[in-house]
Length: 418
Image (cartoon, rainbow, N blue to C red; front, side, top):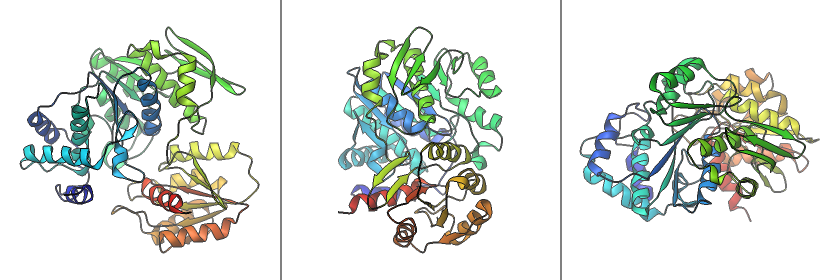
């Protein structure tokens, strides 16, 4: 089967789209009997995981190692999830991995994400990957990625998201994220606001917890930034190409992870600058200039929306900002929209390309209430994009946000234009 048919089939194997637990994946992984990379980095947290994966991947490649990275969800095509030395895995590599898994799966009802996680490990093994970066999909303790033993980990931050599965308060969610911790292995916590459960679980499992503001820190001065770790200090660093002050926190956490993992030889200013000042990542405060300026960001919870709003506020812009928004049914619509309301002049709601999408009509009503402003309802992606362009005109800008499942299709459409 071609990859497209495989992906459609994977959606039918489990009665649940999300089914937390490790047992199914552990059993299939044991049957696969494949080697895992010599170094494995787990990247967990609520926001910023994709950015941290991209930064870590770029630096590790400079070491000369063969590096594999696994992320989710994808923006435009499934192959983005599995990369080897920065290049997407081919359809043939992914299909071959799926076929290998299917031979040993038996009656295990793997979810789409679980199957994909196993496929990434198979692709890495076949490609001779030496260092693997695995982004945790949800939580940590019961996420499929957690069946692979890490040699080091990073928890970016903790905010309210996926509350139906992880809990409805910060400390409970932090306990789930802390499930990636291992005895004697380093784990970096990337925010200066540290939940007590992060410290408590690190102590209970004897993990080596590395904390922002205590074990490492960073500061900005003019057009550059500085970083200090436990042994290494870097000054005069070029600001990362990824936009937003929050990206400095992500960059600092990645450097702390490298130092804690025994890779301090990579912490050289010229190497870090070379990696970070040219880094590009779809859907993270991404700009696409056409007749109108498009800004695309996958912020889908209040914390991410606040970071996006802060970035927008720092940019002097005289024209109108039109927001095209879609969200899934497990997201905090009101909190997310309220965080952005001060930066948006006109809202347009659309139904995301997902079975879990909130219908545009319902979303439009909730957006209007949360923003205390009118919200148009688009009947289709084309309708939404056309309306946004008409409202923004060439003097305005269009913000696309709220879901990977909106940013991806919009970006695909923009890239297809002549």
